[in-house]
Length: 269
Image (cartoon, rainbow, N blue to C red; front, side, top):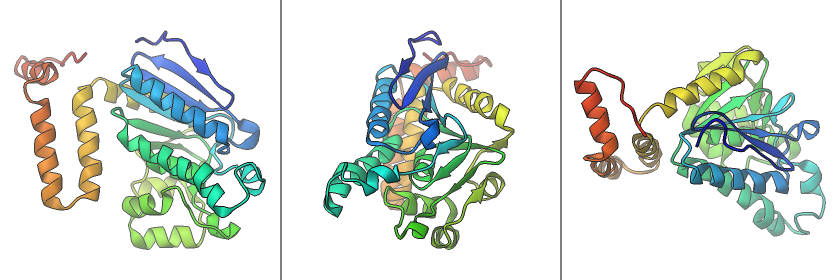
């Protein structure tokens, strides 16, 4: 796989390879503020699967136009396109959306969200599901569903609590706040706030730093964090021991240790 790997363009997104081992997925419904249509949900799932099969080292996710993702496609939700009952809405749209966002944790590579504009509702839930986030100045994120007589239903409540704590999550969700990039950075939600022109280069540079590290170690480290978040201390510790045992003795392990002893940068494959 190389930076020259063939790009893919679907109806709602693009998949490019800006550097070796780094995938760039751009949501591409700018007129609809990259709202989450059924097609976009399906194509994003397909793109993640393709990136996983190519053994990519990192993925950057961003949006075209002035939004990262404005959330659910309300025209779709209020039409009969996803069924005529609340249960149809759940089964055909809400549950697949939540499962898609949860699958971000299961990817063996890190996912970096480059939040270029509004990330609201489902768009915020998508950003919260990424492993790391960068935001451009002037971008906002939030879960404003209460203003529509709803609540976040694709994992946003649970993930926001874990990111910023119960008190701040209650404030932001119940007031439907639009949170600035600077406030998100203060709360530890984002790694960096950049000028708009620097967002993608900085996100790709961060992905490059990640891709230079041992891919198996990155995958195990990522999973260890998510398991530790869900499990009791002893279970999480046991998982960590088994994860390290899985790495011990591998070619990646040997290269890392040898490079340290030889005082050189490791060359992971």
